[in-house]
Amino acid sequence: MDQVSFSADQFHAIVAPKVNMIEAGGGINLWVLGVLVTLKALGNETGGTYAVFEDRVPPGSGPPPHIHTLEDESWYMLEGELIWLVGGKEFHAKPGSFIHLPRFVPHTFENRFDKTAVMVLNYAPGGLENWFLQVGKRVQDPAEAPPRVSNEERKKAVELMKEYGVIYAGNPEQKQQSSSATI
Image (cartoon, helix red, strand yellow):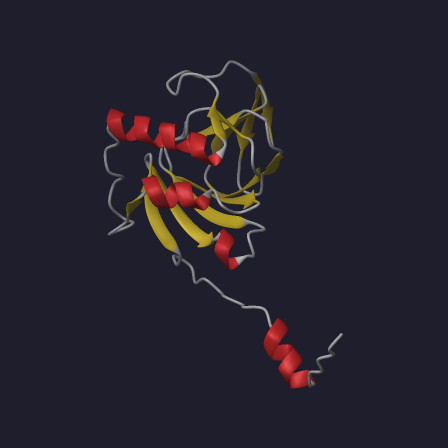
């Protein structure tokens, strides 16, 4: 067996991690089904271990109920308020609220309030960000109102989610009946 030797400088060059800081407002900004999604860390930048987003959720917005089969998800509220519907329970999320969503737990969120809400989302492992890149519309001006989402665009987005191991859990227009809690 051959042996290879490295100096300390050479070893550091081989194993030095890539460090990247994203400034406020930085990242890839996309309109996805009425939500302003900013991709902060992609799976291909984290060795596939996770992806991180920031969502700006306007009043009246939120995804249809769904289930992830390939990744765990977590949410952390920064601004505003949202209703988190998770596993048949309803939570009133305010700044500082956090929730971890293991795979196979049905969930959604809704902005039932009059101000845009902001939260950070983490998906582990990474990969789901590719769906957002496929269906999202590049943002020209984040201050503009979200573009109108056609029924055809919504259907295409739902169909494409299946390729990413996401199952829709009910009618996208249907509101879940559940117990309430504040977190």
